[in-house]
Length: 277
Image (cartoon, rainbow, N blue to C red):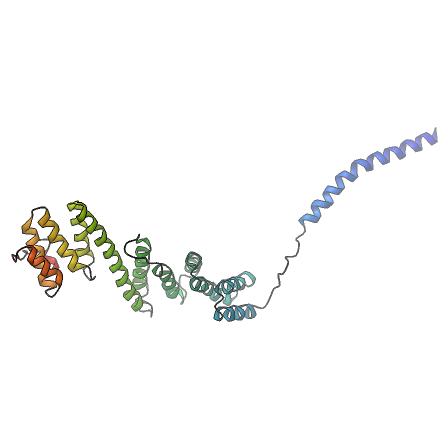
């Protein structure tokens, strides 16, 4: 009887172990998986060492690797003074690599984190360049030109005394010339298609909003041409007079003068064209 009891106890223990072991093994496996495995190839290095290596790589024009190394400065030493410099240098590396989207993302982040930084004017300027470098021919969409123009204006307004404001003004003139050129292209298309009212709106837009651009003489001539086409010769004569007063030596004035047969009418003070004098 006692022997049978011992056998029963042994069998009971075996049964218990058979239930426990399958449960324990998965737990051991899960515990082993939760332990952080060391990242292959990752070595924490002094911040100056990484930054100087990034500069060396940048000088070698390996811009993609330079951007990675500058980002590594921030990853390994996020609270160091070098991290802020590295953010801007990473954006510059992307810009040099023509990775403009990545550069803009990095610059937006820098501006958001460091709005009062002494390097903020440069961050805005570099962001403007990212769009400015992508300005296409006037025959294509001018979205990049519009964005570049907006940022350049912001530089002039926010940082008028910075060394970037002067260059921003020069580049702004070019962006305005591109935008005016696009308006002229659309206006000429409408004129050719006989959509005269649409053409007039485009040419007026150039003459009024882009007065400092090189497209104004042609815009005025095209306006006179359009008015003649729809039979409003009086308006054509006024526009020709404005063209002759502001650009007397322009070949466009010669064409307009011939178009209205030499009949010019000086606009009155309450006339919309008077303000162009």
